[in-house]
Structures are given as structure tokens and as C-alpha cells.
Length: 429
Image (tube, rainbow, N blue to C red; front, side, top):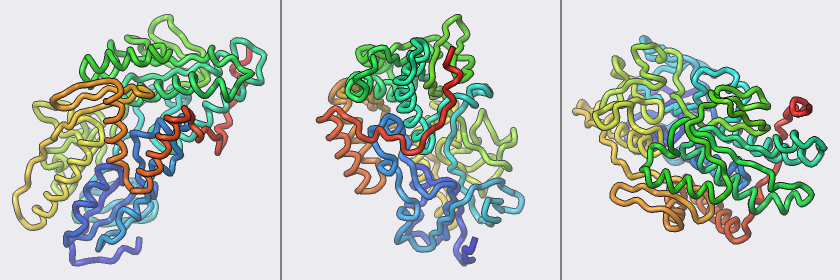
């Protein structure tokens, strides 16, 4: 990898997400050698992926070059690589570009879509965990409407304009709200020769309420907002399959849809060598209060991949940006203490609240001491997301896009840059 040996301890970070970047920044002025590995050369601001999928933002607005994050940091190295295996006995990584030794290893690989073992769903559903996946979904949505113009079959046209989103968490709720606004304000102008009033947005939740990690008031208000926008919310419905045309459930309820989005769960992105039963709970690495992987004092895990259980979080901290950022900062300080022979400080999660936007002037916000919904919550949501975007340019571009979209009620990034090339023959009778 052409990384020089150093007298400083080598800390290898796998993953350039919120956790990995937070840790890298914390180590920027320390006497250590830091190597950051990622399969992409950019950081993705995942909370806004749904806006890329729905044409509200271009992907470069929510992505930031990892090398630019490290500019000016001494003894920092980035390599574009995929880690294939961790050899913890020899303290070595096996990657797509060669082997790399480490003194301390930090696994910050994040999460990936969880299909809960259903291969048919994994094969046919659209996911939205990365920029390429979001671009695929954007293309598919637009291609389906173009195809709807070409067919004379009544049922096929309805299926092409029928959206089914599974998962009532923030991702599903925000995507459903964005699609509802597109149906209301953009489709009639883009497709005047198509009866877009027949387009349906279905949001399916297996539980009895949406946003179950938030307060019941926020959950109820989010559902009310969605129904005002024309979204059909289906609760206590468990999806069992999707063959590319028909969505099946545990009941007799079925949906004919050409756009099926799976947002019903995530799991830790584990790596071979640390995927043994004694190190995993569910799909996440078991770590102690110092982020150390159980039984591996030189290996740490932070962010979505880490399960740090305590009395308040028996299943680990939420798989969201804030715990990842805070764990990265805490681990940065602890690594310096460890190298200096000082005692480590336990991680304490400071819950700053959660929020979700449902559409224009509609959002729900649960802070530590106050809960509110509506227009003010929407402005708070926008401010928080702008603040945590990496890079001044990205903040400016996103802000300008949001203002333009709000004033013009438009989404100009509805472009089929790379066709998804779906086979539409299955929708023909």
C-alpha cells in the first residue's frame, strides 16, 4: 500500500462514515499514524439520500471527498480499498489492494440493508443505503412514469404508478412524504397527458405505529401529515415477498407495483474474522464501555456496527449519526490515553433527540425536554441537517436547492443519468 513505517503507533480506521471521520478529526494533531480505508473515496450524508432518490438534490451535494477531510493532517493516509478479512492473531488486514498491519484497529463499517434472510426481497427490492442505490431508485421512478405513458393496459399503468415503501422509520416516512409532494406538485406538470391522480403511495409498517423510536405524539402527527398528503399508511402488515411485480403479505392484502422500496431494517456490516458467534450479538459487534471488541483489546468498533449495551440501551445505542459521532470523539481521546498508559474513560451517550420531516412545512421533533411538530420542527430539521453536512460548499448548495424548491415547488434533479433498465414485460397481462 506504500504506507511508510513510523515510530508512531499505527491506528487503522475501516470506514469513512460519521464515526470514522469523527475519530479521524479527533486524532488529527496527535503523535500517531492514522490510515483510513474505505471502498468509496467519499463520505455520504445518509440522512439526505431520500432527497437524491426523489430529485431534490444531486448526489455531489451530500457527498464529500475523504481525502479533503484529511488535508493538512500530519501522518494521515487514505487508501481506496475493501477490507476482506481481519487476522486478529497477527494484527493484520487482508484487503483488495494488499495486506496491512496495525497496532490498533477501529471498525467503523456502519450498516447495510437487512432483508431478514428473505432472498426474494433482497433480489427484487430497491434499497436506499448508498448514493448508487439512490440514483438507481431515482432512475426507476422516472422510467416507470415514462413507461406508463406508453402502455394502453389499464392495470399495467396503475402498477407503474404505484409506490410501495416498507418500513415506517424515518427513511420510509421521509421518502413517502417526498413522493407525495412530487405527485401533488410536479407530476401533473411533467406528465399532462397522464392521469397522475391515480398514482398511489403506500407506506407499510409491520408494527402498530410509525417512527416507533420517537414519542407517540410524534408518531401520530407524522401519520396525520402523511395522510393529509394522500399517502396510504398500512400498519400491522408484514410483507413476505416481492417477485418484481406483486407484493405479498401475511394477510390476503397484495399490491401490484413496479416501485418497491425496502426500508424496514438495517444490520451491521461485519467483516470476516470478526463475524464469529462469540463476538456478535444480532448483527453487531459486542463492545464494552470503551468501544473495545470483547476479547480483543487492540480492536475497537464504533457507530452502527458496535453494540454497546447498557441498562438504558439493552440492545445497544441507536444506529444513527449522533451516537456514531460521539463514540468517535470518545474513542479518539481514549486511544491517546491508552498509548500514554492512562486509564480509559467510559462512553456516555448524550441523547440530543430525534426528528423526521414529512414534507413541506411538516416535521416532527423530539428533543430531550421538548417535543414539537409542524412548521417550526421543519425549520429545526433543516438547520440541524445543514449544520452536520460536511463542507461549506455542500451546505450552500443544499440550502440554495431547498430555498429554490420551496419557492418554485420544484425538484430539478429529476434526471435519468444512468438508466436502471428494468424488464417491463412482467407487467403485461
